[in-house]
Image 1: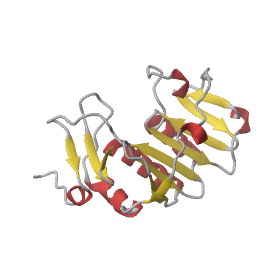
Image 2 (image 1 turned 30 degrees about the horizontal axis):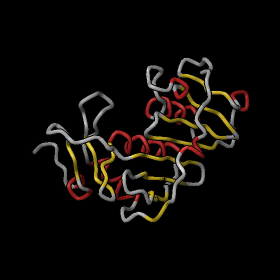
Image 3 (image 1 turned 90 degrees about the horizontal axis):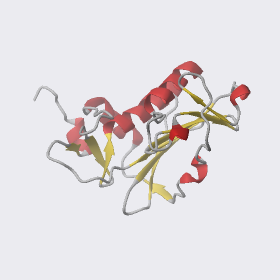
Image 4 (image 1 turned 180 degrees about the vertical axis):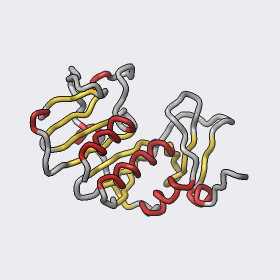
Length: 188
């Protein structure tokens, strides 16, 4: 597993920016041999055998400076009751390769319905890239909550969580079922 590549992916796809509502999430948090990153909607926790304990119990921003503030305790952040998911992780990752990927820009929304709830394609793609870069294939579980769903991806050295979108849809939004996303053809 290439630590630099994983670190770059965490900064690019998981870390919140320092203008977000919680500046303390604008870096990677190092704790107990794990690197943790979140933007508040997608979360990742990665274990490395050769962990840099110089950063232990610190949050480091993209520019290498220390981020002040209390990093959220991700393990306690979302008390989850998880259950099996009808969607297989391999099927979901094939969707990510086929469907268009929205961006974090305001007004762009492209999602895939999983268990009846919309999940942003850019968040699912970030999770896919993370597991691909560490060379592990995750198990997939879903929260038992009814108002909002949470997808939990877990492997030996990595965990990632993605929270469903709850805002109302607009006519500009693109929403796919799994089957529609797998059949998506950008030429049409």
